[in-house]
Each structure stands twice: as structure tokens, then as C-alpha cells.
Length: 210
Ligand code: SAH
Image (cartoon, rainbow, N blue to C red; front, top):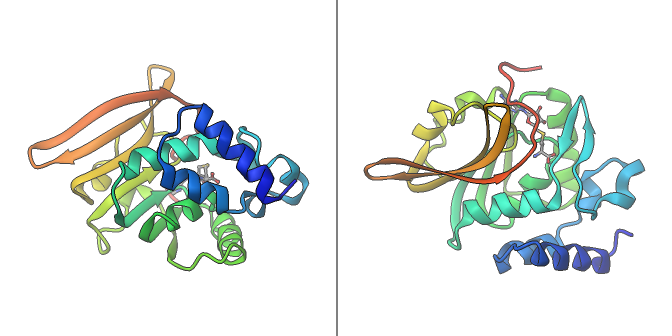
């Protein structure tokens, strides 16, 4: 149930669901997702469902992780990437195989500890975790080639847009008028261009730390 064959089946499903980026598919075929979910749920780690993470939070489904990574990557190599909402660290781990360095912020200290354990077990080393409110980002590390938020905001946080490099992409769930959609925000020399993508369901981006 936690074997390479189960992961291959997951990847075939992702392909059938329209994920096209071969690099993303290859990384997800390798990364042991069961390490990141609680032991009691490990048998469901490769199903295409969001799973409870504890603390009222949820682990994004494989399809959501694949889609957000594909949109952020846009077929090009990534240097520095910022993730807001580390959670269990699975999206972080997938990004770590696609970007040179991954910076990830999480507002709940207990989840930072959990993610750190998971990432160590998965052998991930090029990731920097920070306990803090992701609204502020990491200005001292910016600019980033890509920024991914895994919690829904009413709009792209201003400080994070400023930390996006020109030509960079932000992928985030935006909650508007009672509905949530994935948005792709591209920073160009002339400003930002926003595109609405798939309908999604995420927990809200909250202020402060816990
Ligand atoms: N991508 C992760 C987590 C998804 S849940 C996974 O798949 O496991 C969203 C996460 O965002 C939660 O862990 C929540 O605590 C965190 N979060 C919410 N608001 C935040 C904020 N302002 N700054 C940093 N993290 C935040």
C-alpha cells in the first residue's frame, strides 16, 4: 500500500486528470507521500483525497499539489520558491525536487515540528522552514521565482507580490463571493496579471501565529 507501484497508479490517475508536466509527475512518482500522513491514514495516502492533518487543517490532495506545482513551474527550472502553509510538508517536499531552494512558512509551531520530522525522514535537505505569519513572507530572501499559498486568502497578499521576481508566478486559492478558485498571478515588467483557474477548497489563511 505504500509501494512504488501504488505511487505509479497515483501518477497514472494524475495524468488522466490532465496533469501534463512530466517533471512534476516524475517527482510525485518518487516522493513517499505516506511518510507525510498520520500512520492511521497511511493506507489512503495515494488516493486522490484531502486528508485531515490535525489542528483543523487538511493535507491537499495529490491532484491539487500536482496542479499547483505545474502552474508554478511553468516548464522552467526554479531557483528560490516560497511556500505559505507548510502543514505536513508534502507540497514542500515535492517543491524541493523542482526548485533549488524552498522556503516555507507555517503559523502553527506544532506543524513546523511535524513537517521537520517528515522532511527529514523523506531525506529532503534543501528546505528552510520558518514559524511565522506568511502574510509577511521573507523579504530578506526575496525575490522568489514562485510563491505558493496552500491556504485561501481574499486576495494575493501585497507583501508576497512584492517578493515575486519579474517573470515569477504566484499560485494561490482566492476566496471571493463564497467560492474559491485557484489563481495564477504573474508578475511582469508592467505589473501583475491575474488569471482564474480551477475551483478548489482550502482552509483559510489566518493572521498571526499559533
Ligand atoms: N500544504 C499543506 C497544508 C495545507 S493546510 C499540506 O498539504 O499539508 C494550510 C496550512 O496553512 C495549515 O497548516 C495552516 O496552519 C497554514 N496557515 C494558515 N494561515 C497561515 C499563515 N498566515 N501563515 C502561515 N501558514 C498559515
